[in-house]
Length: 168
Image (cartoon, rainbow, N blue to C red; front, side):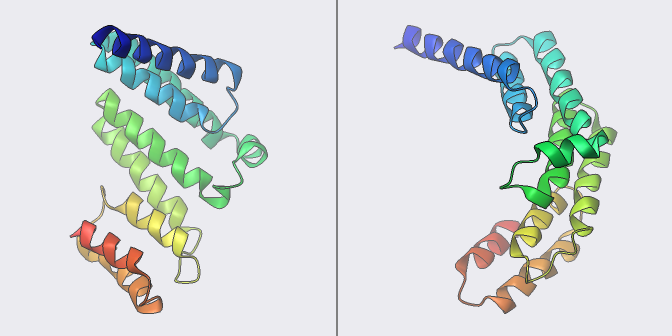
């Protein structure tokens, strides 16, 4: 079983690397790159992982710093949440790189970009993403009202109660 597991892991790493190489302008290439770096990290290859996390960060920053590229390549399912999600990804990468201040800045940028979308009960997806982005950088007292608004607007929808409970 161990050789099969090792082979499967190597195949996975190869597939991630190949996907990034073939589709570098695909939004999900950032996640694939990050996942590849995490695999190297699990293997104990700290220097290799660091280099791959840096590549993932560079990819994300390309999207963030080039609005035309972002608009052209943003996945339809993410639409207006692409920029906040990119900042969230950068925060995760900075965390992996041990850059605490840069991580917090990226996380705050994810919150700021989501707030620009004017989340409301009419756009519950925006509120859910906002709550997720706020969780690592804001106080519970600032986050909780967003979920209470959703619970009030949609009292029959269990999802918002569940997310509220997870927050506590």
